[in-house]
Every structure is written in structure tokens, then in C-alpha cells.
Length: 78
Image 1 (cartoon, rainbow, N blue to C red):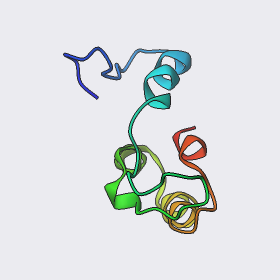
Image 2: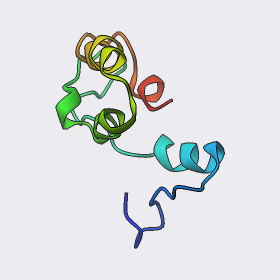
Image 3: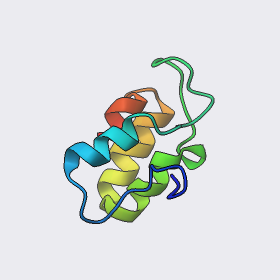
Image 4: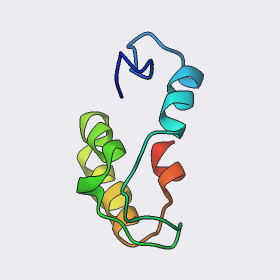
């Protein structure tokens, strides 16, 4: 995400504006298919989750779901 590229996320943006920017954001490059397990620490979206997602949900749902391919990247972004 970069202000110079026009895809920075502003604090006052609507959900729709944020989703438009996050939908195309790169994730873990190892996850080519939905069924491929990932590494959350390599994912840009996981960095955002660490800022706003409570710890139990972060480790149990987001990180574990990514590592086991239990959730897809689009699900993680939502």
C-alpha cells in the first residue's frame, strides 16, 4: 500500500473504499491455490490483522486458517 500509488488506506474511508484496495493487495506468494497452505508472517494482510484483530482470533482463526488452508486469502482479507 502506497500513497504514491493511490492505494493507501485512509482513516476516514468507507468499508467499500477499503475493500476495493484490499481486494487486490498481494498476499503470501506461496499460496497460489486456495488449497495451498500459507505462511501468515509473509503476508501483508496478516500485518494489518496484527494491528486490529484481537489475539485469540488472530492466532486461532487467521494464522491457523492460513497455515492449514482452512481459509482463503479473500476470506482473510474480509
